[in-house]
Length: 381
Image (cartoon, rainbow, N blue to C red; front, top):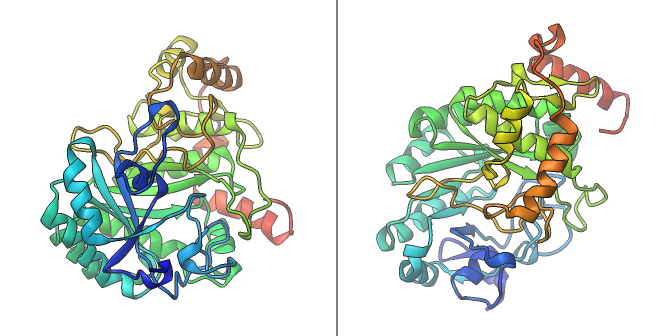
């Protein structure tokens, strides 16, 4: 059956890694990585009504929706009942099921129907990566009452300006920055602290300072930070942009870890005039010890039953190799030697300093205004 005929709620698409883990397609993971989360995507002939500039599912990206890649990989379709049965057979080796919505009005009710099929067959916790633009607070309450255990909100950008440029009016898209953050707050009130995640992406024109303070905002809201690297989809509006520098991503992974673990706050970091992190408010020895824990550089995702990340998205942000933007496993000694060098050389040679007056006053309005002036001037971001 053609993929475009495999519509939700009877069918969903699954990531290539999920299809491999469940045995629907053949393949082998680099370094024997495992895909611990069953990543699913709702599927419709008419596709997603949004047009996010970096997204493989964007309305104006060439091709049929059913054939479009998403986070750089193919998503083959399968019958929900068949996938759920396969998950039941293998669930002792898995950690979670995640259903990704698209911005399509049919997705609101279909998400509940798909979740119900898994709830009736498997005991794994269920996450939904929601589409805030088509959801209300009462519908989120329905999701919670249906047994959905975690909710993800893909804010993605670090600025309202960037959000508008790449997800809203700048691309004739329907999304609104304020509504996304309202959804985060509503979701935390319904699902509880630590049961809502905010997806953020590195490499869309923001500074490291911008993201560090958004990390702090997410943590203060009671949500978790799930960090992604920009990795251009071919034929998308941003296909010409490179990935962020590896050292930048590593610094931000460490910053996320420090904020979430409440070891340091964003206000205790040091930044240069370009907004680059040059100090974490830690001494050299303490910073070195934290880097050596290795965990900060693993994929940040929804946890499995034992608390470790289950949504580890093997190689969804980068190609396999010694240098990875998200390690889906604990990095080995060879990988960590490169991580240590990149992090400690770029931000590990400074003793803690008192935050500058500029950093103490840094807030969302300052950040937004600075970037907004660059956008209005037509400069590169």
